[in-house]
Each structure stands twice: as C-alpha cells, then as structure tokens.
Length: 481
Ligand SMILES: Cc1cc2nc3c(=O)[nH]c(=O)nc-3n(C[C@H](O)[C@H](O)[C@H](O)COP(=O)(O)OP(=O)(O)OC[C@H]3O[C@@H](n4cnc5c(N)ncnc54)[C@H](O)[C@@H]3O)c2cc1C
Image (cartoon, rainbow, N blue to C red):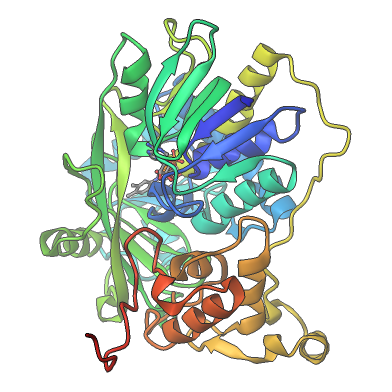
C-alpha cells in the first residue's frame, strides 16, 4: 500500500498535522517509536500558551506562536482540552532593566500580540503579592494561558484517529529514501512503509531525518530543562505565569500555576549531547530554585512532589523549520520545534496541512466529526448527576487514585477509547491517576490490575511506559528449577 502521508512522530506537532489532514480524503498514518502518543518532549514542558511577544518579528516562530495562541481557545472548547487564559507577567527586579520590558512590549506589538500592558511596582504587587520585594515593573500579557500538554496532544491525536487517521506505535523509522518512482520509503524493524509525502515531526531527532534526505544540513541540540512540581495545597501561590526577562538561552525560569492546580517551577537550559537524557540533576534543581527565588518570595519549595526534565529541540538558528527543503520534494520538515512549539502546534498543523492539501490537491471530507469528548470526570458533575452516573455504572463510585480522586470508570474510559492507554503512564496522562502527592505509590498496583483485566495481559507484561519498563518481573516466592 502507498500512503498519501506518513507523519513520523506522535508528539504535539505530528498530532496537530494529523488532525488537520483528517479533514481531507487521504490515507494518513502517524508512526511513533514510543508506545503511545505524547512520549517525547510534548509530555515534559512548562505547558504555557505563550502570548508571542518575545519571538523575533517576522519569524515563523512569531507567526506560529501568535496564530497558535489565537486558535487555542476554540480548539480547547471543541476537543475538551483543559485550558485557561491566566495571563503572564515578565517581571523586572532591577530599575536599569525596565528598558528591556519596553522593548518586549514593542516587539509584541510588532508581532500582533493583543492585550499587552506595562505595570508599575504597585500594580505588580497588588495582583501578585508573592512577587519579590525588589520588583520594579512587569510586562503583562492577557492572552497567555496554561494548558494540559498531555490532553492537548492526546486530544488532537484521538480526534485525527476518530476522523480516519491510522496510528502505529513501537515502530521506529530507521531509514528514509525516495525511490525512482518518486515514492518515499521508510524502513522500520516492522517492515517498509511507502508514502507520497513524509512529515518529519520527530522532535529532537528531526535533524537526523532532514539530514538523510537533504544536502542543506541542520543541527539540533537537545537543551535540557529541569523542573520541580509543587503540591496542589500551594496551588494559589501565584495566579499568573511569572517570567524573568528572556535571555539568549530561552524564556528563563518561571513560576506558574498549572491547569490542574499545582505550581510549576523551571526550566533550566542545559545543552547536552544525548537525545534521550531526561534525568534531572541536583545542580539543575538547585539552580532553578535559586533563580526562581529572585522573582518571588516565600517559594514553598518544601511542597515539591516530583521533579522532571524535558529536552528542547534547539536548532542552531533558533527558528522553526517548516516545509520542503528544495532538494527533497514531498519531505515536509517540522524541525527545530522548541518553545513555543506547544502553543504553535495548532498553527503548525494548519500551515503544514495546508501545504500538503495543495500539493496533493486533497478534497474535504463530507462528514468530518468536529468535536471530541474527553474522559468523563465525575468531579465536573453535580452531586445528583454523579449519583446517577454511579447508579448506572458503579465503576464511577470506585476511587482508584486517592490523591487526584480518579475513579475506575475514568480508567476504563481511558483504556477503551480510540488510541487507548496501554501502560501506567498512558493511564496517568489521560486521567491523572498517579500524578498527585503520593506519585502513584498507592494506585499503581490497582491500575495494573485493571490493565491486566481489560487488556487480557499477564501482570509481567504491564509496563510503566512501554518497552522494557516492566514493573513486575515474576513471583518472589516462585520456586525456580
Ligand atoms: C523545558 C521545556 C519547556 C517548554 N515549555 C513550553 C511552553 O511552556 N510552551 C510552549 O509552547 N512550548 C514549550 N516547549 C516546547 C514544546 O514542548 C515543544 O516544542 C513540543 O512539545 C515539541 O513537540 P514535537 O511533537 O515536535 O516533539 P515530541 O513531543 O518530542 O515528539 C516527537 C516524537 O517523535 C518520535 N520519534 C522520534 N524519532 C522517531 C523515529 N525514528 N521513529 C518514530 N518516531 C520517532 C518520538 O518518540 C516523539 O514521540 C518547551 C519545551 C521544553 C523542553
């Protein structure tokens, strides 16, 4: 079979392109080496929907950021993605840096960012009392928001799948070439795939594929960002996303509420070689705490419930690379998608989807399902509605994750929906089971039992996140010959 389009990478970028293409009559496949959607950088970031004031005017980054921000509201509504415009503040703690805020403000205006305002010290402290006493002023952006990065990615992928896009997991693209018929071939351990168009949405590996097919080489450095996540009992520490002034290395260490009511602190910006190295380090954590404490006071750092790191796909020119290289027709890059890649994803989907539509002269489907429903959360219902739900389906009365109050009904929904969960992390990203204070200490065995029962697998086959991440290796008291 020859596909019309194969997308390498089921992160937020690949999923956004897939969703856009699902509007048209075409055979589209998304391929990922991971066991699920959202196993790369899209799962480990600040989850901020940036306003777009700090990108270089005229750049693709600026255009995609502002357009992505604009699209996010309707997308979140249609696909039931948790999203809120909480506003952001770039805070200045030295008088001599106030000029930098004005530059950002002007840049934002050039980029077409609405709702920007410069705040003085008193205005800053009145809206955010936990800001440093040294605060001199801030740039306020009312369109900035916070989103659930897992649900954003999963929702777009599910929506694409619901509208006919196929997904294949545990399938690593190894080699890529265009044959004499002009068809792209993708070699994997599970066989060869053929397609008219390839979309390169492979995150930190996008340079590998680009360089396989084009003479104009690119280079991506994995730039690690370490984070601390604080418990929900301090979730009101700040209301807005608090940034320092951006530097060459990025947007700096922020303190922000998350859409689920935690507080996130980070990220660092450490250039490394290894494209898989996502372990945090003590130095990274110390650095992020000391830098965060320059802009806020009484940071409740004792309320840390976990730390994690993500890798930015930093291309040497710090710009998104979107579209076909001149010498590789039919090969569509989505490379160098570092921050604001999450924000930009709906716009990247729209842009790349449009290029492919025109190139293959694709026709719109008559029946495109425009909405998608999320895993039903009984906490969003009234008491009467919840009682009715439990009466009809008692699984919604069984609490499995105590910290996040996740029921068995939600876990069953997560497993049995399109592109359903197959691992502990898959369940976690769809329901939040295991994301709370005890970090899955209590609910892991119970979620594993549900996975065993529902997927018909032996306990030894249940993994944390696919591959070799098995949790149970065998019975401890089993007598072995
Ligand atoms: C520390 C940090 C903070 C950030 N904060 C923000 C923020 O607040 N707001 C914002 O807008 N953006 C933010 N970003 C950027 C954003 O997270 C990324 O731009 C976005 O997630 C990139 O998505 P992607 O789909 O391109 O890459 P990924 O999510 O990494 O997806 C790539 C996929 O390709 C797959 N893949 C790779 N190689 C192969 C292969 N050979 N075969 C098959 N599959 C393969 C991987 O398994 C992976 O699933 C941040 C990034 C980091 C690291």
